[in-house]
Length: 63
Image (cartoon, rainbow, N blue to C red; front, side, top):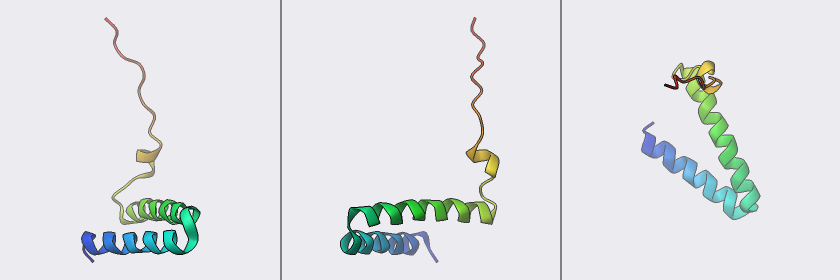
């Protein structure tokens, strides 16, 4: 399935949730869609758990 078709299906799901369930349902569907996207990328191997929880190196050479 192409990314355009996937995006269209996601947009339609958000539209139906917003129309029938209100703004709260719209936000819930959007949040669960984002979680599903991250889990799917993790399952495919495109994303590693360390990428999400990597700490920043705050030490910089101040000269």
